[in-house]
Image (cartoon, rainbow, N blue to C red; front, side, top):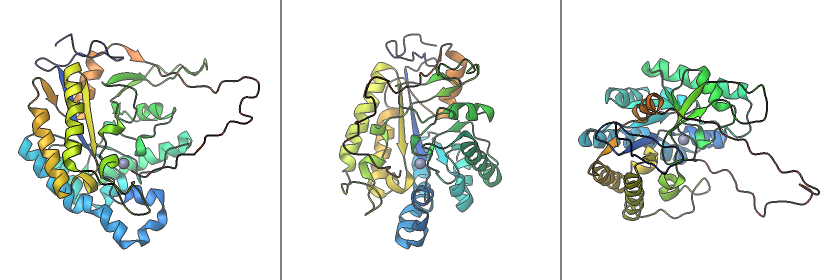
Length: 322
Ligand SMILES: [Zn+2]
């Protein structure tokens, strides 16, 4: 193993022999689930449903061909509802040698839910993947990348190896299940691996648009996106960290976007010493080689005279489905 990888990072990691950085191409197969979770009445909208079903029906087969041509394995985060709706697609992903991971059951909104409710979603998603494809995933990505403080313990309870929903690093690290909450009962000694993500490496912000549902109305040029993501990959490669790209098949599986994605894969593969692999393999490597375990500190609202009396954000950000 090299020992100089990513020496200045908050979460130092040494990559396997002959590698000095890592890259993973991940696909969130949301299909209809993210739209239904945002608005259950969206099932009445034939065109909107067709926009979402383009993912499993047209885009996933195209993307699988690209991955096969490029001889790399991807990680596919699949909500249980998608798996039950498109069982053959999930089986094709598995047969292609790719990793299937957990992404909720119906891409449920996670913000503010209690642990029991979240546990229910996790179990329902696990049941669906087991039933459809005989898969027991080791990886989890929260819908909308929205992890709760209680989520790591729920994942550890179910034997998950890793999560990929947090945004506080350039490289994977081991995350303590217990937080620095100031509560002396918080003594859980378990940990899972965290593989951080980045909104700049998500295709939603570049391409997603459906009138009245999501997006700004601007659909970026794949040439611009290819340039932007290449710069990110080059920077991760140079500093020895981990490039994790998140694509949604119904977005990035459309013709010109898929061509640009294949060009990006070619460029990343050509980077000297870049380990292009699944998140599962990156997580296994992290678990077995990193000794330090990071405990997250919970943020407390500061208390001082007048606190909370008049403060109001200028504009509340609305939830954006993704
Ligand atoms: Zn998603």
